[in-house]
Image: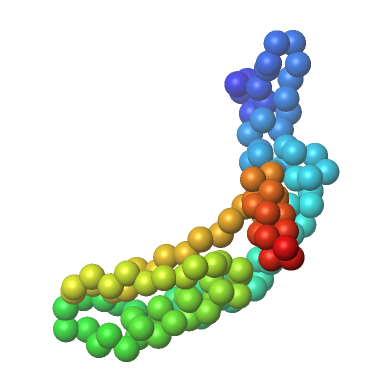
Length: 122
């Protein structure tokens, strides 16, 4: 890396080497940046709603706010498209929320969707 933040690879100088990958990705990166910018206000509002709940979990603390935070988190995850939301309850701790979000454009997922769709129609 040079002193100005650019890196040299062979004889080429990459001026944006210090930028996050989505900023270096050209047109696709621009679309990602636009999407993130469009979602940021809502994400910040959701985070403020979660942070406003006094969900401190320690022995003797009322479990209601912790459960309220759990319920809001589950709703936010569902709204975001998270599938298979689950909950792990261990003695003396706050609930742990789990979920899965499959990659939307992987060839394996696309093939799996086609197999499931064709299986339903036959």
